[in-house]
Image (cartoon, rainbow, N blue to C red; front, side):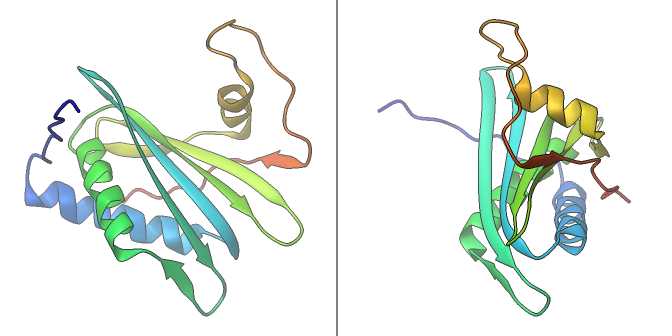
Amino acid sequence: MEAFSLPLPHNEEDTDRAIDIFERLLETSRTGWHHLVINLELEDGPLLGRLEFKQNTETLYISAAETMGFCHLLALGVSGIRGGMVMRTKSADAESVRGWKLVDGDPLPINRAEVFTAYCYNPHTGEITAPESGVQYEDAPVIHF
């Protein structure tokens, strides 16, 4: 198995800011099951991370270890590594997708058309594929400070 070295955030401020952004993301999340993915563009290729959690009005069900790993990757994005995040939410009556691009350390919300294009674009063929039935592509809320 090939060894892999994970880069470190540039400083403690990046880590603190990533945690603040993650907390803001949780505040803007609705009740439901959430699948959050982060994709960072490193020199050696893309680095992906994911986090699943369930949330209702009173309780958050989340793995502390997986949250720490996700926030580490988010801190790399905050330090200036380009990338993006997408959150898919399933609730009792709906399923939605929204996303953010990481530009110069800032998670900038992308609109529903950009989310739709990202989800329905086939990078191998360059063609747009049919959207998933019942999925709502939404404008992402502002989560940066």
